Length: 287
Ligand SMILES: O=C(O)C(=O)Cc1ccccc1
Image (cartoon, rainbow, N blue to C red):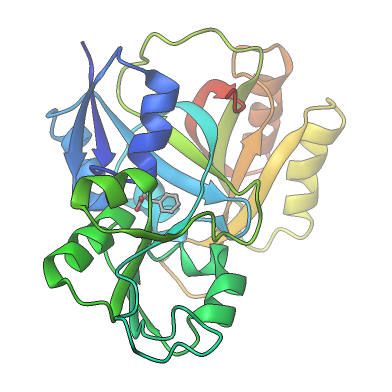
């Protein structure tokens, strides 16, 4: 059985991966996302799971940066999974005045850095007096709250972390939107066996030639006149020189298709550098 590195245990990554890959893989948990990437680079695992984008926040830039700059692992699949955020901690001690806010006693909230933007309304209403502290995963936050046993410190994480670490669930589904989704990527040298999917995607990075007016327009027109759909385009700093960017482009087509390779050739012909991050099946959420 293939081994899959995940941020975990008891994280959203674990929930999402178990839902998608079921029991056909062995899951190995790592505390840091850098360890999740490096496990597959080092050959400890065959694949790594990366949360890459959220409905409310957009790309998880730190993870995109790792994928682009730190490792060279092809994308093998993507899927989306709904994320229900929960406030996990200890209730106010009896006799303490709560006023209208039952969470006024919470002074610090521990969670993963992508979480506050997804629960901003709840946090503004009930946790405005609390400081947010970033930890390596939502589960790590719950683990720390369990170790501290202090009602002033709470976490935001999965229902399973609340059960596994024995910290009460104070409030369920505190995310701003009911259908809060996260997109996950499976990356690794070898393509795993997965159910077939009608949807295929290809992700490329394009660096434009310098001093070439209209280069981006030409890149886009190479896709446009072939009627190839792009599902995302984002400019990101190259990190080499201030003001230089590459474009991260998701294409709703396979590299095996007739038209996409010729579109890429056309883009290269005008002097763009193209790096293919992967051509892979895409799965929408099936409950
Ligand atoms: O920390 C976790 O639980 C993760 O898996 C990362 C994450 C955090 C919030 C939404 C989706 C994934």
